[in-house]
Amino acid sequence: MAERVVLITGGARGIGYGIAECFARQGERVALADLNPAAAAQSAAALLPLGAPDAAGFAVDVAHRASVEALLAAVSERLGAVDVLVNNAGICPFEEVMAMTPETWQRTLDINLTGAFHCTQVVGQQMIDRGQGGRVICITSLAENVTSSAQVDYGASKAGLRMTTVGFSIALGRHGITCNAIAPGMILTDLTRWHWEQPEHAAFIKQRVPVGRIGTPTDIGHAAVFLASPEAAYINGITLRVDGGHQACCV
Ligand SMILES: NC(=O)c1ccc[n+]([C@@H]2O[C@H](COP(=O)([O-])OP(=O)(O)OC[C@H]3O[C@@H](n4cnc5c(N)ncnc54)[C@H](O)[C@@H]3O)[C@@H](O)[C@H]2O)c1
Image (cartoon, rainbow, N blue to C red; front, top):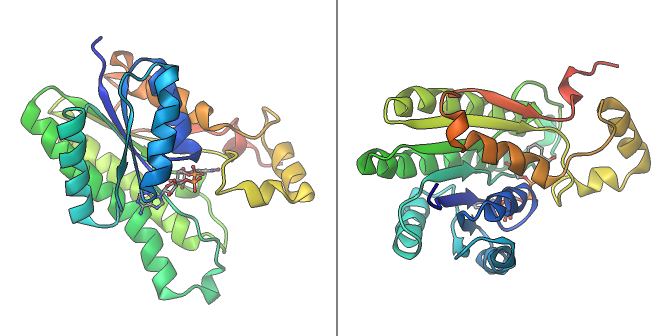
């Protein structure tokens, strides 16, 4: 299979970078788009020795439509049309809902939900116009189904993203473009590091994860590579949970 252009939002670090590593090892052409373009460029450089022929970093704020449109123009000019879009950029402010400001609520939805809408609509239109199919993968969370009082904005955004994924799968499927979600469990990144720095919390979560360990960004990357593969062509509109069995465990 010819190398494809894989665009990953929030790709400078964490799960986005783990996904990028897995695509790079397949020899795919990776575009890392991030709010922090310097970090994206540095991370892209680290992908070159893994096998990505021309990985590059790009600036984007997915919450803004014009920024997403500028990103697609820049990626297309440098690497070519996008074959695989991974909507990974996301935040989780962890504010108790009764004390949460409307600004926090709005920012979480703007990035986690509306950002994925902008990217999928803009990149999806390019995929339709090109007529060669494509893949869209949205990174949701177990919070698409369960949440806490400190993650109400986050849970709302991820539940919305799950249904946005389903809706786009219907609209894009007839063009040979599949749209699926991956719901990671607890993955060790800068977003969750503070949990793991509290020993009793880390022990509790570990006990709740049947496979007995926290997840890694590349656990998510391997699932993304599968969903983007030709073998996954008939999988459309699903959420694939990659959580070591966490959500299934009630003890
Ligand atoms: N870490 C986990 O345990 C976990 C679990 C479930 C789901 N997720 C989801 O996985 C995704 C990545 O999480 P992570 O743990 O790697 O987080 P992270 O904070 O380590 O990385 C997120 C990246 O997104 C970028 N970003 C933030 N806002 C952006 C914006 N407006 N536009 C472009 N880029 C932006 C950041 O600069 C950063 O590089 C998120 O959608 C998160 O909700 C994470």
